[in-house]
Image 1 (tube, helix red, strand yellow):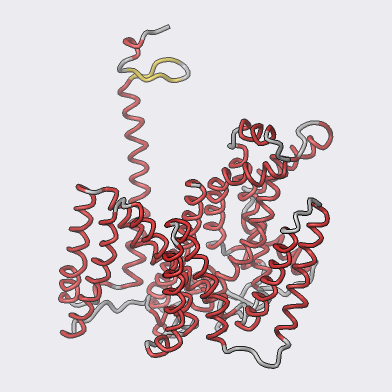
Image 2: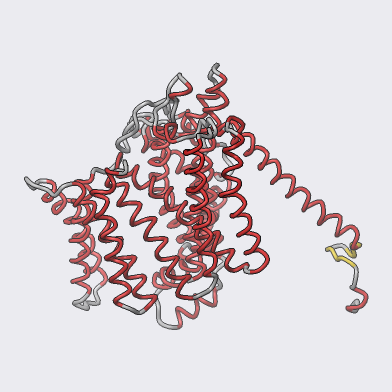
Length: 537
């Protein structure tokens, strides 16, 4: 066997020695390919952003003002973090990105409340679920070790809560006003959850109580301050609990640990610089970019006039379709992966059937998306009789498309959990289900979320299945239920690409592409945060 001295300066492959020069050339080619791919994507994004925002239409004074008030201070802070306090730099990036992502998530929740579930329906559902939860908790306190009886109690309580209690609430002659319902069923529970988190971290009832009080008072202030500032009451309350709650938890964690506290100043530098720059350009009168992507574009319906065109109905349709996909494909995919990895036999007649199923799942992951569109048309529309082009049909069809990806990635994540951990759980007397639920799944969740991120990223950009299920190219009215006609963002963008008007084909289309990318990034960022949480736990 070669000695360590003879191994120095050489690279080894399976067939013998490979010279260091060849190894370095190979590493350089890999690095170059990676840089080239990233550069091409960056150039593409620059072209899209240039068409959507049109920075060349802004005055030179506008750029100079924001360069002095926003760009230079931000760069100076980043240079300081990079050279002198890298940990504070990570805190700075997170403290700036977290409220931005939370704001985008707030927009998605607001769309669900505004288009999918009425606030009174939410009240009835909330009370029904609370009543069912109270029954289950009361039964658990009886300490009765009867699995079948507990399951029956859980199912019965849920059925009574969802049907009996819910209908009773909706049948009341008088109900509270919508702001009070939102305050009691959205702000208060979320504030209690945030306050409990702060109380547990600081081991202080006072800190938790102050957090709950601050969030509830801020949410209640939206009844007056919201309309005065042109913000809806529900929007204000959602921003309070989602953005305010997430920022409160993160800032409390950083301040309590004392690690990277200087990074919390970075959002102040960015937001303060943006506000100062805005005040200066407004007072002097510098003109900003004549962007296609603005608030009007995000809130308007499609139009043949470029200046009036918007993407709001398609944005709502995509979010509702993603909701259906998450609620259908994710539980089925993870459940199938759990069975195949933890319960399915590996030998015998059943084992051979399982192996055949796994081979077919791997093959289905590579089937073209248009085939799934034909499958959705045949199964959901022609066989079951669902209406074509609806949100639920689109969600189920695209859910079938990503289901093999979810199953395969979940299997790999579950398979990566060491068997020694399972054996230790069995040695402590745990059952197979207890081992899967309490030991295997928590350790496999980061990998499961990684696969789900990739799958949802593919789902939001699919167009061919939507064409096959007869989803309309353009919808001027946003869907208000899962059974409404809808047009997703890729379908709407595709329709703009065929327009003769260059403003629609380039400017409006680029604004739609940028919106789709932002939604995709927000969705992925949320999944990444959830994945990282499981990795830390």
